Amino acid sequence: MVEQQMRPDAQRTYGAGHEVRRVYAFGLPRKIFVTLAISVVAGLVMTMLGFKVLGLVWATVSVLAGIPMSVRIAGKTGYELALLEWAWQREKKSGRNVLRAGPLSHAPGGRTRLPGIAAGTEMWWGTDKYGRRFGMIRMHETGQYTAVLRCSPRGVAGMEQDVVNMMVAHWGNFLKRVGEPGDVAAVVTVVETIPESGARLRMEMARITHPAAPEAAKQFVSQAGAGRAADRSGYQVHVRMAITWNARTEAKRKDPMVMVGDLANRLPELCGLLAGCQVVAEPMSDYEIAATVRRCYDPRVSVETGVEELVRYRGNPPDGQYIDWVDAGPLDADALPDRQTYVHDGAFSRTWVMSGAPSGFFTDRVLEPLLVGRSDVPRKRIALIHRPLPPAEAAESVHADLLSARAEVTTTRALASAGAELKVAATNQARGEQAMGAGVTDYGLMVTVTADSLRELGEASDLAKEMGTAAQINLRPAWNQQPAAFLAALGVGVLLPDHATVSKTLKGE
Image 1 (tube, rainbow, N blue to C red):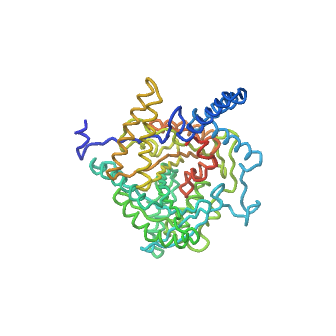
Image 2 (cartoon, one colour; image 1 turned 60 degrees about the vertical axis):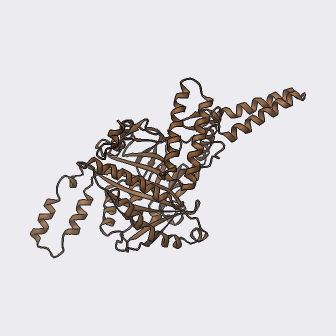
Image 3 (tube, rainbow, N blue to C red; image 1 turned 60 degrees about the horizontal axis):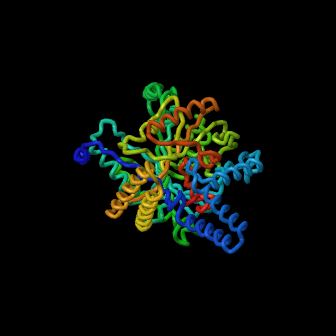
């Protein structure tokens, strides 16, 4: 089997890595376990010194304090769940879960900015060394900058398997090269499927039709475009990649134009690396990014037509025919009381997050059930989030993972130790591969489904979960976090771990 896998034209299998959870004993990290052990010992010393009641109470409270950290529900500790519930109740009581923007609201200037943690973002723009205009999103709170690439991947239907294997290898090399400078916070690849509105066809017809062309030729082109696409049957797929950088120098943190100059040189290099993956990539302009985000919040045909109009003008539309970044958000949005539904501009959305990676080994087509367009799930968005680690941090991370896996073996019993031993083998292999030059990245996945009504959303949600199961991925709704999860899946530089309000200690990290 191994010899067959080594053939260039053989379909290879890949591993999903392992979950990063560094435990020392009883499901607790080393720092927390040592702290609680010292506290328990202190309680026992108190009883030996004659303070029996105080010592017993102290030791009991110390043990009880560690239980919520050792027992996890949906990947979260008891303290984390309690704080999230408290935050939701506080937000609901103050009315901050409801957004009203626009000219008749109290929003500054009557604009429709992005909600939540993206409300303070700014849009800057520049031109790369090839003269292409690109947009750059600035996140003040975290000191991060994000640029978005429009991607046109090549289909693999009918392609030789050795070419597909080479494309996968180039993708791994791309993630490794991106993480080498050490300032890339995340690479978010967004694959979005929406119903075919016919807007692309109409814009293409307008582009190829010369105003001075004969009337017969114009009529011929018009009749040729009156097919299925114009009748809104089928679907269209849009792929984009958002790359977020940390501003590591004082000049970049204070002056965004310094970062614009840096990205003007780096974006063409990234597009060149993606070409090895058979992906044609080009930077999206500030107007295109704003219109794309607006379409996600307001899924109307008129908005889709506006987005295609911007593509026609290559991001440089005439005055007045564009959407500003400060108007890219929704007019109204609300997180419903069921805590797993988000309403925005009359549409209903639900976002799931990956709670478990694919088990065992899989092929390069593992995500195909999720990515393929379906008429019964007309609007969905898949966001694959990679957070490449710099070489120095990667070495420390894989070493810490190996020590944690070994500690888990010593604290488990019977059948549980079999899984722990497999984890030791996986982390040991990752350590060896990293030492030989392979890259290391943390990753996650988010799935958003949008519908026109709650009933349609419920039907589409069941189908989306089935698609996740077919892709061997465990999905769960972003409970109490739907607005933030919807925003993070857009690919606009919102990285939820960087905005977490729960400390790492209470998360059990």
